[in-house]
Length: 548
Image 1: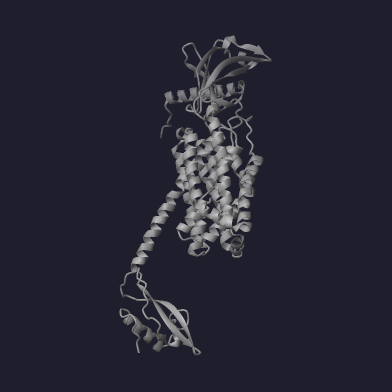
Image 2: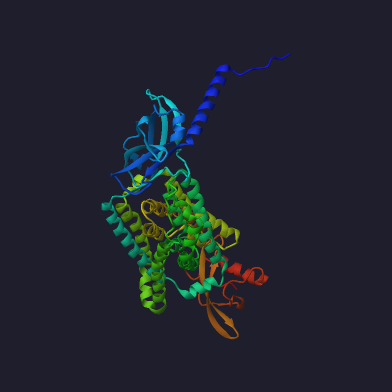
């Protein structure tokens, strides 16, 4: 017969104590309340201090029944992000016998203060315990964990903003930014040929692919990266900046890169023009669908609304200069021609301005820089290039269209994103979120430069294996009329200087089968014709010689 096993009596005793402690704490949760006044501080300036009141209340009947009047109360105030703001004193001890009776509750009040350290958002969590005179823990009344939800109304929602002395420089930067982008949009409009745009739209597959990747794939990619890489770590302002950047239209630099990489320039210009016009609808739409999730506080009373009016007015301010440029190109072509000459240098200036002047006036960005933000800013354009390329290839687009769509998808108008964030949202969201478009602007050229180097290597490799070619000038006779012609003939394996361009046969009367635009099609030419061509090529190093 097998004896029945019993657990360790010491272990059972500790389990019993644990259950009693949990039961006591749970019951105390039902009559201990904590409130903070004011519950929201959204204008705490860096290096400044603000006072607030913590009030702890107990139900008088339940408080007396548990005989807690002779206990000590220990209150712990803890910042979720000490680098953003921190309380001046973390632990406080109060005698529970000195509470004030008010409306059937025993109230304990504590006046304390918090100091802003760095631009950002945080909250103060409260940890309340009952202790004895030796400060040994007796009962844990209330604890708000670091990842608490909005229903915890006792949270102090704390936003730290920049010093007003720096804000004036920031306003100058935003004003100059609006002016520079407006000029860039006028120049971009001068680049637009409406006839070319309409011709491109007549073949709607490529523009439709570009629209889909620009305004559906990119916002969803930005949301996924922002949600998984930033919001999950509590970096909601960074997530907002990345999402707005992903919703922005294509940048003017995309046209430059498309030409550099032998893409379809007409398609690129058309997509940039259309995406800029459509952004006035698509950006507010995506902010309404997903973007609002990144406008968050730590208190239920915190209400952060999407500033649709400011977003739309900002976009209108950018679209009007673009339409002015289109009007100039249409009705003042001489002005448009002059503007087109300075467009690309000016685009380069805009990018340099955003990075250099933006960094000088926003030095705080270096203190906010984190690895999650850097990684997210690099991933967004890289994923944009990849998805634009793969989708275009899957839909059987020719290589020039693939290049244009991929570049147009990955190159975002970061200037518009920065202006929207700075102009539309309140601090500190506006200042913190503007860091992400700057990171994206710095990261975008990296994969493009890599692609350009690969493109040049492949091009050089192809040129080194190509056969030499020479020009052939001849006179073709047809219906008694002599017509001068010129064709380019490949020399097969014959090696000549690739820069050499000299006539092989000049002013010679060739058979009538050369009267077309080039050599006869090998699949259609007669044996006599192909034999003649072979004899011509055999004598290539003897200019002027005509085979019989």
